[in-house]
Image (cartoon, rainbow, N blue to C red; front, side, top):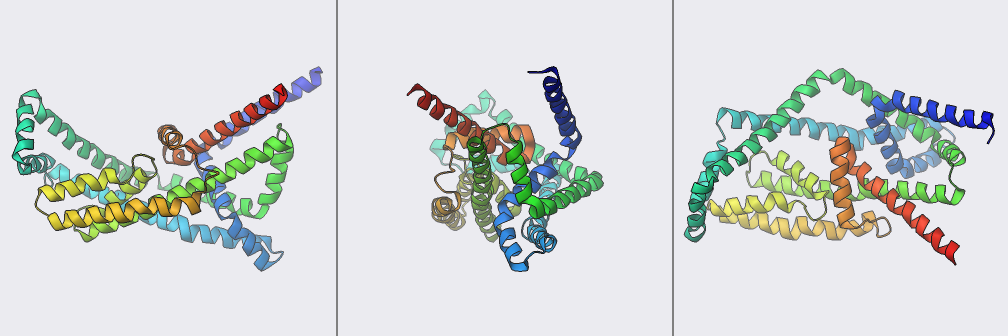
Length: 349
């Protein structure tokens, strides 16, 4: 390799690192613009065919559809969630909702053969366990109260990021095909490898958002509406929590509705408990089995344990973006090693 060629590669790496550092503050806006462009590109293609050669008009219509179907409902739900969580925290903090008293009532309502062993744990620090459970609810409410304060303080930053996302989304719709062609030509990988990774990237994004997210939203909506109909406080908060837990394999919405059904049964609300169990088992439980095959597809589905670990890891590293980034990294990792294994097998033969 010549000195000039080596110098060019060094310069290429340096300017790439510098460019990444420049756009890093807006990585969430860029990431969600790319995700929305991938999800809604089939709709955009139909709009392009409908309006003819007016690519700017088609891109504007596509962005408008994204705003109306995804962004505005998401903002409404988020603001309502923060407000409801803040109200819950205020009621716990002022003593209107006494978690310790509720836990004590639950303990007293247990059957005698269950209550006696628990009461014997008083000497082993059961009161401390009860206090810790109450503190968990306090910390959760404090989290939402903090989010409400931070949203108010960072309004300008939010609108800047939001504007960048919409601006970029417009150009991704308008020039998406050209950008994809440029990226493929610029890729250091072979044409076959580039094509395979691009296909896997798009399929995982579609499967995660169109499949997993839609299923989780449906399950959370059913659970939240059921809680609201049964008169359970903070139904929206519990519905969103069920939707979030539904994104995690082997966890699911049952983590919320099963303890709630047990609580209702122990407090004498047998009819409400029966209704909640019925909805949880026969409605929420069947949504995943009925909708996942047509929405996700077998070819893009990762093993449940991989999805669980990668989603939790992604959420811990990237926040809310991690529920897509985590499984995406896992899928690309598996694809890369699959290609390597296939080529190694061919070379050995």
